Every structure is written in C-alpha cells, then in structure tokens.
Amino acid sequence: MKAKVSESLCIGCGACAALVPDEFDFNDDGFAYAVNDEVKEENKELVKDAKENCPTGAISVEE
Ligand code: SF4
Image 1 (cartoon, rainbow, N blue to C red):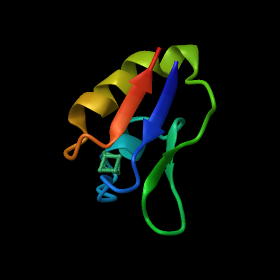
Image 2 (image 1 turned 30 degrees about the vertical axis):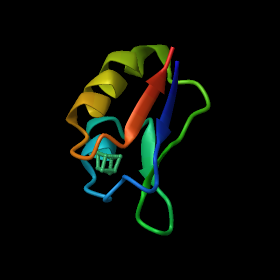
Image 3 (image 1 turned 45 degrees about the vertical axis):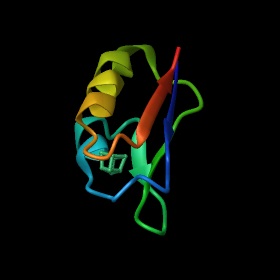
Image 4 (image 1 turned 120 degrees about the horizontal axis):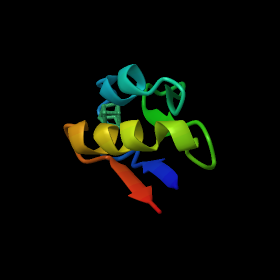
C-alpha cells in the first residue's frame, strides 16, 4: 500500500502526523508527506483512518 499527500490540498493541520507519526511528517513548507514508499503492514488501518479524517481529502491511498 502506498499513501500520497496532495500538497495543493493539504492545510498542514497535523491530524495525519498525530495519528500515524510513523507514516506522515511535514516538509519545510509545513505540508504533510508520506514518509515511507510502502506503508508498513502494522500502519495500514491507521493510514486508512488518516485518509478518512483528513479535513481536505488530501490523502490518497493506493493498494
Ligand atoms: S490531515 Fe490532511 S490536511 Fe491535515 S496535515 Fe494531514 S494531509 Fe494535511
């Protein structure tokens, strides 16, 4: 599974990084990005939750 953050949609609210700090971090511009090329097995459900909870729909997930 791969996660992606759209920088044009992200508002830097921090929700995804708070929920799954292992998978999301912030770049120097304050936008989130997916840390790992492949989402770790143990984080898959949390990444799906992060996607559902992102207020701007900036996170996409590819199986
Ligand atoms: S939850 Fe969405 S808007 Fe908030 S930092 Fe993460 S990707 Fe950006």
